[in-house]
Length: 377
Image 1 (cartoon, rainbow, N blue to C red):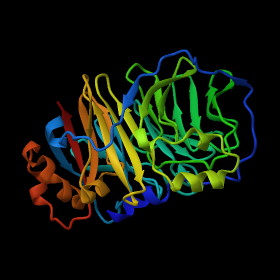
Image 2: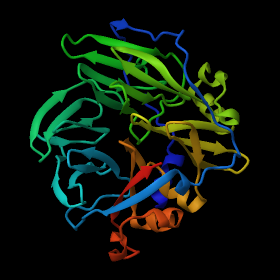
Image 3: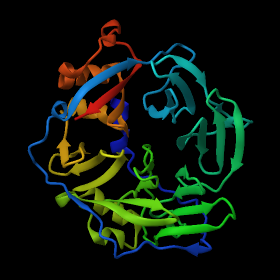
Image 4: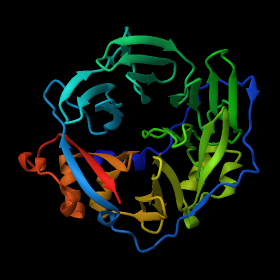
């Protein structure tokens, strides 16, 4: 569990080796569009997490000595099941909806059907796309058969649309734009969010891109408090969060020295968005806030239930286990992934909401994972 705190220690990664490159065409977003703003007010009365949900179904995940996963595992939904990705160790396993192991998908290496690392996973129909940063997109069938091996110029994070592929490079990546889209039919490239800031590139282990409720793509923009949307080959501001005293000062973005800017940022209060997901009615955002007065980072969650935003937080012990754990919203269900240890820290928060008893058969010192299907009110 403690290893998940690396989010708070490994906030920025410098990408000084990237080459200078320019797009052939740039499409800018419409600055006249009004962006909905969500107010974050510190020291509020939080909504108890259990009060925002109706039920929790727990699904233990089958593991054995041959298919063990590491400490930082990410969840992806797939037809009639789900995937677990151990990005750090380049492992990808597929499971049935009841948690039974089905098959591996690819493996670490340089040969056919192998990847050196995993930056992103995307499930499109009955195909699994594995992005091997920075230059390959591998496409597998659900049972792990390699279908395509596409050489791509990829960013830190990538996401395929119906007509092309998006790549996120972020601030300070020497690309000139933070987001680049390549149209598949003619190879034409478009750059969005022009960026000449002298900042260190910020990358997250969590996915940057996610499907939007209307068929577009929403994405987190590293230091920015704004969620952006890609739709019809255009990028527009979609949702902005006013973080109050945790807002990053405008002078940070215009700094002439990346390392001095980072030093100044880390000496102040600041907040960044480290995760966002939505469905037709619901939205969830995960914030990481650094409070200098308490000399620590903490997590905050905002949940939009179709009527208003509810904010909740957890105790220090539980908070540590929550990093990256609430992953996907789909049809009113929030999917989360927890270790047994983490769940034992959390279950008192929603014990009365648990509708099954599978956890009773698992030893408290078990090092496996549990999928939580959390239904929102």
